[in-house]
Length: 114
Length: 111
Image (cartoon, rainbow over all chains, first blue to last red; front, side, top):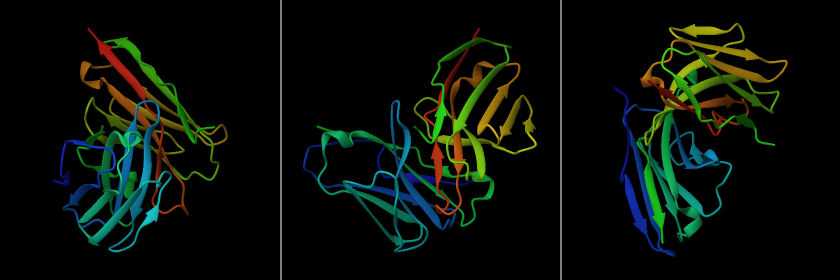
């Protein structure tokens, strides 16, 4: 059974803190993605990665960075958390070809920045 | 204009009803189309792909109209378990395996 796990379900951080969100997939997928989901705005792509050490900006990369040192792990970093980064963060992975359009999502991390 | 637009709903329907959701997309270069389902406080999961010829999976039928840039999802004989948010999703090649998600249409099936 395919599995994408995220390090925390809920996280509360203070403004200005550095925040790490970890994502691990066990499906040997090449592609990994970080989204945030906000009411009325839907899922928005922050960053994605085709391969180890590769990264591409998504639609809203400002204020975020990513790291992919191993194929199975994709980390999202908030260098200096701000209140407007309070959101649900979803990680996803997919095979090298977008077969069937299926991205497999993790359960999400609900981040609150106070 | 949003790349993918959906009526947010909610659509409140009685059990056994037929309900249809629509979605429009703005990029005529869009190549592939999908419906995802997201249960409350859960992650999205692929429901079905949408083909030009239309496709059916049990009680679910998806259709694509490329000329009008319009996608639909029809659910027949609604069940309580169909209550969820349905996300319209579009894939454009050249952008590197990126999917663009609509904001979703919420369905509530009631007794």
